[in-house]
Length: 213
Image (cartoon, rainbow, N blue to C red; front, side):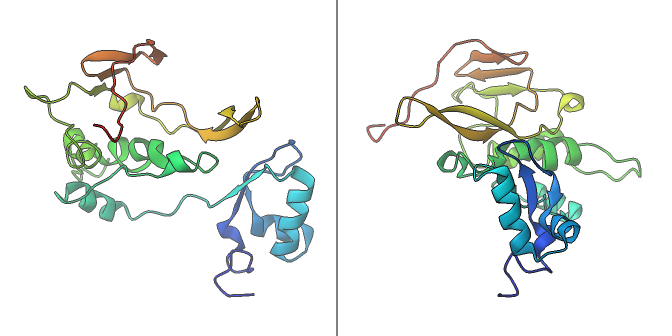
């Protein structure tokens, strides 16, 4: 087995047994810990876990340990572009877009810590995901009135949720991963509220992007 394989003993704690399709478990433990519990090689532990829990169960990578100072440097750098994801093409893989405000962007890096070190202001922390990469992030005449209103003290990390709302082509539905909003107090699209206090307003002021546009 290659040294870099996630099934290698040295790497097996880089895989997290996240979700069981039938509830047998265990979940939220690493493959390495589970292998140690069974007294077998990680590859055998993986096979055993999938047999017991079902092939629609989820194994993922734990959250990376992040260099906080580097995150701050990237947020301050005028050339940083953030919040890019291909999660729309991988519905059964985690949509990481919700981790931007919760984990690295707004709450953690936009406030002063207890030691008195200044990080960066909310405007600067949100810039890589707004004005840097699109016609967004500035309230000016001529700009699109796409606005998100939030309270830093309310921003919190939301756990992944498995929802069965994706048409499977046979009249039924299959599943995808999602997260609830951070939360946000108000979302405006072209100046019209689409979400207010966590509730969908049923307004659809956006324009579908097509090759003709």
